[in-house]
Every structure is written in C-alpha cells, then in structure tokens.
Image (cartoon, rainbow, N blue to C red):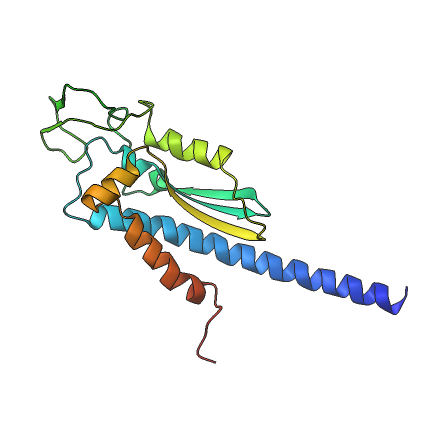
Amino acid sequence: MGNRTVLNRAFNDFEKQIREKVRARLLEWCAELVKKAVDFRLGDYTAHNFTGNLLNSIVVVLYENRKPVQAFYSSEDGRVKSAIMRKMTARKKPYVFSQLDYEGRPSTYTATIETNKGFGVNDARNFFNEFRPTGNNSFDVVVAYTVEYADFVETQRGTAGFLIEKSYAKQSGMTFMELVSAT
C-alpha cells in the first residue's frame, strides 16, 4: 500500500468520525429545538389553542445530504396532548365548541383560512416524508409549523412561536454545536 492510499484512508476515517460527531450533536440540538418550540407556544399566555392542531403540527427534521435522518415531533412531547378535532377550515358559520376546546374553555371561532380538514400531527408527518432542502449542505436542520394557518397565527397574533423559535435557533446553534467557545 502506497503512502497516498494510507493518507486517503486516514483522511476518510477522520472525516467519517467528524461526520458522526456532528450528526450526533445535531440530533441533540433538534430535540432541544422541538422542546423549545413547544415551550414558546405553551408559554405564550395570549395564545389560544382551540383544537391543538397548530401545537401538534410542529416538527424539527435533520437532513444529511438532503435526505431525512430523523424527525422530532411536538406531538411526542409529554406536555402536548392530541388534537381534539380536525383542523377548522374557512366557512361563514362559526365553530362552536359545545363541549370544551383544547384548553378546556368554551369557545367560538370563525375560521378564515382554508385547510385540508386533517390533523396537525399528520401534516408534520407528511412534511417529514415529502420535504427536501434545496441546498447542497452536508446537514440541514428544518423547523416547521406545518398547519396551513401557522403563518396567519404568527403574523396576525404573534403567538405561533416561530419568530422566537427562529431567534432561539440562531442564538443557540453556534454554541450548541460548539463552534464558538471561550478558548
């Protein structure tokens, strides 16, 4: 075996070790990101979870070379109970919660956003199966609020939690990945 072959093998082994360490660290960060997303939604006392679908639709996915590695679902967080009904969709007649809504309150809501009338948890699972990042990165981490009305809730009410989640991800990413340190 020539020197070039030995050096190439050593470099490839080193690269594999680095990739495995980065993947493991990113998986830990993804778990933290979904936990924080739940924290931000549940911790906003001005938010109102009528059905629980927005909360159940949050997913964080790690991709390696544009292929999904693992998804972390908010619905698997012990603090998040299942949605109580399918997503509301735009209609003239308000939805009246004759029993109680997701938060245990009597509610009435007139939906203005068209939905597929499914469940948020299914939107999150479909996202994992269908979405692929377009970049040419070794790794991508994607945080998604997958219900059709998530953007409306954030822009109109400021309570979906994804702006604060984005800020948290920017702040925590470099230190969580140990790309910046005191030394």
